[in-house]
Length: 118
Image (cartoon, rainbow, N blue to C red; front, top):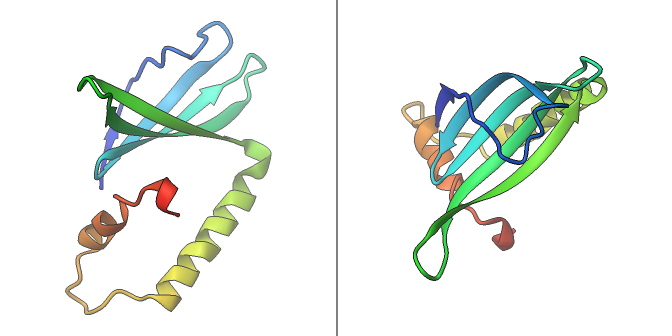
């Protein structure tokens, strides 16, 4: 996974009532994840997580399929606690094999799972 800063201009974003404060992108296989801090009209920050995946139409034209999750400040700790608990469960139930195991390679194996397959 490769993290990078980005200044995307989302066409669906209405600039008059949503302001992007910070953005971080993470490339993971054929997907890109964007973690965007945005601000509402009332100056409240929230997190927008977007998964973007490149797809091709029948005519070969590239399109980007996007899925978004919005996390609001009052729920941050609940999400972090649940994520940490879930990651701990995975690490306990299926530890990495060997000390020389490259976490990047392990992650790459999982990055190509289709949500339709789940």
